[in-house]
Image (cartoon, rainbow, N blue to C red; front, side, top):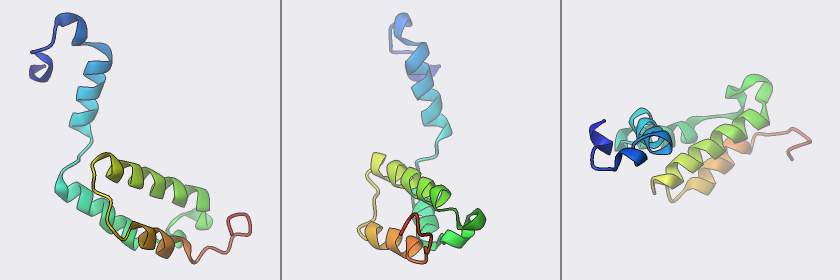
Length: 94
C-alpha cells in the first residue's frame, strides 16, 4: 500500500496494516461526524427493541467514543444523552 511505503518492510504488515485498513473503512469526515451527532440528538429509547436500555447505552457509548477520538464532542453532549434516556422507566436502569 502507498500509505505504508515509507515504512520498513518489517513494519508494513500486521498491526500497521490493520490500522491503515480501519482508517480507510471508518468514515471520519466532518459530514460523518455531524451525522452521528444528529443521530444522537434524534434517537429515542423507543427506537430500540422493547426499549432495550443496554442496546441504547451501547449505541450512545460507541458514538461518544468515536466523537471523542476525533475531538468532535458537542458542547451539549450531556443534554443530548439526557434527552435520550429521560423516558426510561426500566426499574433496573432507574
